[in-house]
Image (cartoon, rainbow, N blue to C red):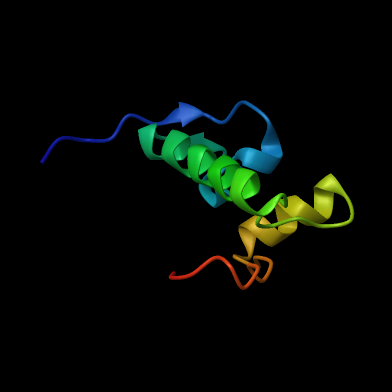
Amino acid sequence: MASKLYLKAVGTKIYSPPEAHLLDKMTMESDVWAVGVIAIEMITGQHPFEGRTPEITISNIKNNKYCQFPDYVEGE
């Protein structure tokens, strides 16, 4: 099994995955996370982990506390 390449976490923090905040590490999967967050934001008009401040948004990301999706968004 190939080992993963870990990079130091950089970028816009409210689009970074939990491991970037908890471990200060990112992988290629981190980019997929960011694209997913942006896609949800484009569909709903709201960041999926939105808080009143960037710090609360980051806390929501670390604790997997996401906003309820509108009724027109189906599935998981």
